[in-house]
Image (cartoon, rainbow, N blue to C red; front, side):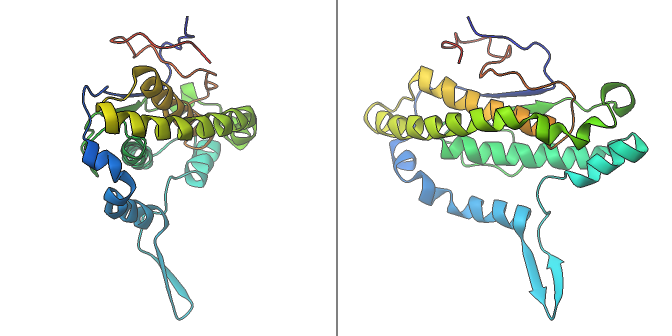
Length: 219
């Protein structure tokens, strides 16, 4: 039976599609180039002129700012939290599409079939002010596990690509594995870098939000 983690502050799932489009699946990386360019500009965009650097993007997920605010002011500005949440949602929609989990073209704001929610923390009661200094270090075991899971997920997606081209279906067990890998990575991000929870991420692909389908064996 899978290990459940009721009430974990980050919840992630993707609606299972009954049928997928063969054409968009076949050319998925090319199909996503425009939105990938948008994502790179938002997270990395800079322009340098005469020794001056101007940011033309958002700069990616906020880590150092929230760390300092938690450490010295015991607060997590809500708009910083919202920025991180929406950017992570956007990236997760792109990741789901790249992983062939959905036919929908990734939206910049609509949740579509990709569901990601994070509980906004009450810093004074929910977070230890000193723990953000070492969370990235405490999460090292997860980095190693995620490395192997990501390699496995890559080959699973390649296999699923052929399955979709022939059957228009994403095998349920493979779908659950890829969704679980993304969920695991997002939990580690929430703990070690978004700093929204002190609860250590579970070593599990599954979540209690998966009520409508029976998950495969736990890893």
